[in-house]
Image (cartoon, rainbow, N blue to C red; front, side, top):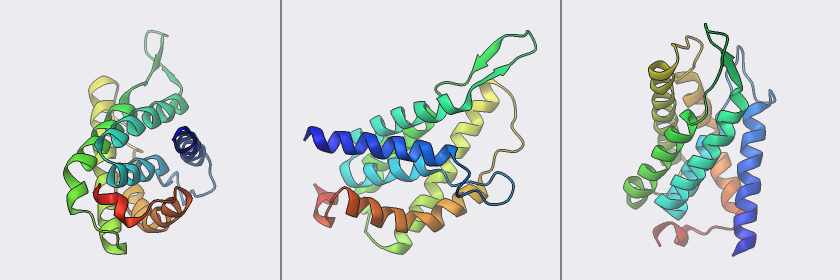
Length: 171
């Protein structure tokens, strides 16, 4: 039981590391958002509370990588909580609402990842806009498409790594 949680935390840290690396970068700063894929996987497989907590802590890790921004008054403003909120909301809603209709196949995983990455990035962008400023380089569509392309392979990898059977989806 505790070993399962340790491996989930290791996966969370690995997703955070991959989000910060340039290994999968395409073109001008288009990278997949591994944290969204990780949160959606566990929300669909384990339920809304896994989605909520993994989204919250995964979002905090993502927010810490953003660092601070110096404002007009020479104060440093940190953007802690923006990704945390959006990932937690998406994780909970996915676990609560979409879990019953989830089927384990390539097309459904691709559609879920495409749509949920877009929604997560839209929520985060709106939070940036509300509390800070507009970010014109924030990508919605390209990241969503990239995640949708990688999502099925990562779902297969996560199912193998965490030894989750298809039966566990509908517990």
